[in-house]
Image 1 (cartoon, rainbow, N blue to C red):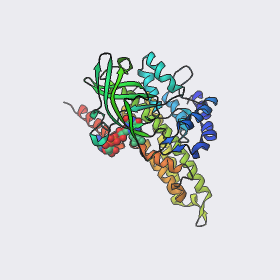
Image 2 (cartoon, rainbow, N blue to C red):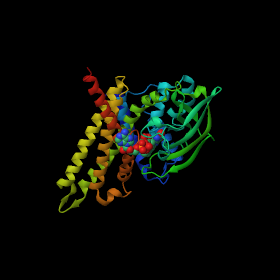
Image 3 (cartoon, rainbow, N blue to C red):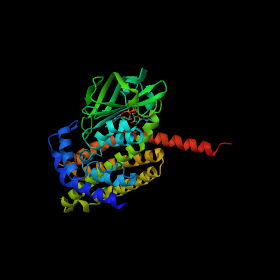
Image 4 (cartoon, protein in one colour):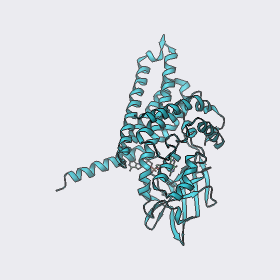
Length: 387
Ligand SMILES: Cc1cc2nc3c(=O)[nH]c(=O)nc-3n(C[C@H](O)[C@H](O)[C@H](O)COP(=O)(O)OP(=O)(O)OC[C@H]3O[C@@H](n4cnc5c(N)ncnc54)[C@H](O)[C@@H]3O)c2cc1C
């Protein structure tokens, strides 16, 4: 690991432990995520401490994925950490995408405000499931866009749009005659109406997750990201790094849950000895140690693949499945080790468990990744046995 990444990660970790963790009990943390006022208060402190947007260097360059991994893990030591230092989803993935695909004009208008942490963004892809819209299968997209002079006009409905309520920048996906398209839009816009904010199991994302109606949204041609019909190609550019950065942040959270559970098991006594000395408890914590280490190695391996210039689609699918499932097991065992206190809100372990449960679904549910890996095995087998 490079010296610069180790130094940044150490600064981020100290900031999260000393400054961010005390905010975990702040009443401004609601069911639909922390308020923007709280986010801005934490960001002002992160800016002063020199740890805001730590994965993007002052010259605009991005840390390598392997370097990013240790920095984002440090930011994830609290569910509030990524918000405080501006490494959270969906902004982190959106910044990466605009940085890769955006024209200089689009970057100046949309990217700079995200990198500086002044505003946040939303990614509009998923659609209401029971209306037959895009979900695990994005090709089912029903939101349509059509050219009208120098503009595009977009109509449709979206679901589970994280942070749409309160975001200033939107990346909207819609289908044209050529295929999928992506547009950068300013928010709020009267043509993008928040129908309702869903009540969900997780609570760390400001603005929560919204059902959104897009009604005759007019976007100038110049705000299309790349070319008409290339939207899924650009989604792929965002997909692997975004999947992996979720793994990095949640690895930090699961590590914190393990610290709290170990502390509990080393202090709490029952049946004449410390809980950790009961094999049933000690083994759960040991299994956590193994899962955490394996998750870290899987992330580092996949990050290395992305740093080598590959899209890493297969590798990031493997990493996403392994890491999300392993971290869920870790959080679940932490709760078990802590007994009643594990399911109470006295510690952050309860929240970490809820957050990690949702991670097994977004950015591709586990089964969809396994299904696509099995398709690859079949394809490779067919190639290997062709005539
Ligand atoms: C907390 C959270 C935040 C989100 N944020 C955003 C966001 O900001 N922007 C956005 O666009 N979307 C967002 N999403 C949506 C997310 O991307 C979708 O939930 C996900 O793609 C799954 O789609 P779906 O919910 O329609 O499930 P469905 O497609 O209905 O799938 C349901 C289940 O069916 C199974 N399944 C589906 N296909 C297969 C298959 N081929 N093989 C085997 N099993 C299969 C899986 O078990 C899957 O969990 C978010 C979701 C959550 C939970």
